[in-house]
Image 1 (cartoon, rainbow, N blue to C red):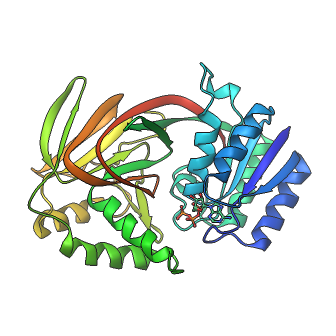
Image 2: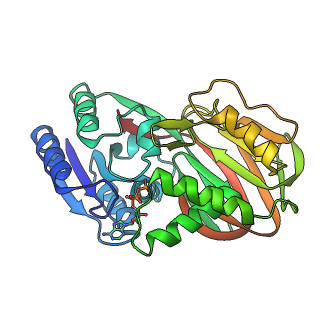
Amino acid sequence: MRAMLLVNPKATTTNQRTQDVLIRALGATMDLTVEETGYRGHAAHLARTAHAAGFDVMAVLGGDGTINETVNGLLEADDGESAADRPALLVIPGGSANVFARALGLPNDPVEATGMVLEAVGQDRRRTVGLGQALWEGQSRYFTFCSGLGYDAEVIRAVEGMRGTGLKATPARYVNTALRHYLSTDKRHAAMTLEGPGIPPAQGVFMAVVSNTSPWSYVGPRPVCPTPWAGFETGLDLLGLQRLGPAAMVHLLSQIIGTRETLPSGRHLVQLHDEKEFTLTAERPVAYQLDGDYLGEVESVTFRSIPNALQVVV
Ligand SMILES: Nc1ncnc2c1ncn2[C@@H]1O[C@H](COP(=O)(O)OP(=O)(O)OP(=O)(O)O)[C@@H](O)[C@H]1O
């Protein structure tokens, strides 16, 4: 079996020791080529190349951003390919939150995750997962776990700004930034409308979370589950907030932190489960994030579910 391992040496928790353990372990069971990513976008380029060269497995040691790029590189050709025609994805958590890896059931520790993944390699254990696709302004990008418009993307933008100055993206930094930013975000004028085939339209949406799986994120070890029914085997889920006031937020937070199985309740929530397609349109540009990467401000994004898109060794 031919595998390419992509390592993002700049990812938050990736270090030389983990890299050595992984290379030795994977190299013992597969014909392994190792590549380090050197810049933003490099993982997509390497994944595209590996796919074209007929690699069987695409392994990633890095965070959710590197995984997202890799997946987009693997799906780029998309000329009627099925999951079995693409290299299978194998992930080892090396980033800050590692939502995709943890949502697949992997431990957050890279060495422990390597043990579990090696077992899966030995037994040729694979799981086929669906992806989300976002389309906006003539652009398209796949996502593995979530996208979002509004307040959550504003928080990610603020944290990315801090990372640009050399600070690390810790759970405490996200929480502090979210609290501080909450004071300044617009809580009076909702900008967004939701519509889609067979979906009752909803207006006055301040913030929307679009999920391909649950949890949506983690605060340290604790999962955050605004869309608890979302899953890799179903379509896309959405939670929209039509109120951002403190009472509505406290009520919502109390229902989504920790492992959850029931949908949050509240009069000003818009919820979708297992949908194929919907569009969020905003009357003014709103912040936009995809798999935890801030992508700028947009006025309209269409989200689609892409079932059975990729095999994952897990
Ligand atoms: N050598 C590099 N130098 C700078 N940036 C890089 C390099 N290699 C990859 N990147 C970029 O770094 C971004 C973040 O990396 P990644 O997601 O792997 O780690 P992280 O940010 O620590 O994790 P998380 O996404 O969980 O916060 C990726 O989007 C990728 O494009």
